[in-house]
Image 1: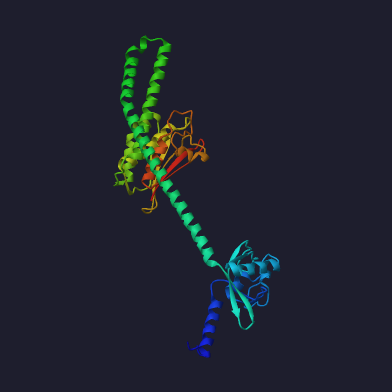
Image 2: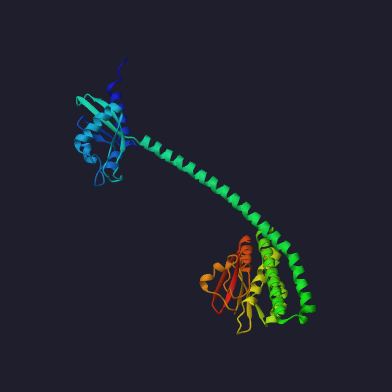
Length: 382
């Protein structure tokens, strides 16, 4: 074979030298005693101690000065690594690295005609580090997939449970209405025709029974409404907020007259997209709530305010001057069966029904109040 011309050999050496200096892997060329003859820029950036490297700052130093081992121990590891192809060194903290217990290096022997001795090529084993990182990433991905799969299965089971509970609540509340109506009618008939001939104690028991059946009838009605608010299909229509408010007001006109209450409506109306039946349920629940929790020492005043300057800023609020509730209960009262006033008969379902209907319409429903000063319930349509 014809030897390459000297110029080509020089060019090849220059290219190899540039590749060594620009390599992304930290590399050192050491003499047999561990002294650094040359290192690339990545090695200086990673392991130069205490100051920003400016180039060739490690030349002539022993590799042991970059570790946390004694020189003899470093040299023993290096020479053992030349036979095994790799070694580990506990590198000290550098400019862009932290102290490590086991930085891995590949070790190769290089013949040196210039120095007349064996040289050691030390290259940080990034491939093994990358492979370990990829393994960890794959393990984490597999773990996350398993967790997501488990969460999906748990969510499906939860949905099935909720659907079963909703179906049970709806069926139970619906099926209870017939015997309750029969019992209520029988008690009313018995009280009307035979109460006068009963002793006082019997009449009192009859009144207790009538109140209990009325309470159970209200509870089953509210349970049925709550199950409808959760499970019924929403029939979205464009409706007038002012018309919806008027219909709710008309529905409760007798209750308002009975307690001497008054409703004042302010603000201009607007049109919105909603299920008319469910919106009517929200408004009547809020007005009924104001009637139920009116203050015993003053006439009931309810203010329904409609305001807004666009689709994303429409609001409807129902404010009253009733008994109110503690501000810290503003979130609890929207939960099913929570009652702010246990001394007043109620099921604690009405407000949670309103909150659920608003959630299904993507409306924002809030409650604010002060004890003995009234409450304000606001629906933000957006």
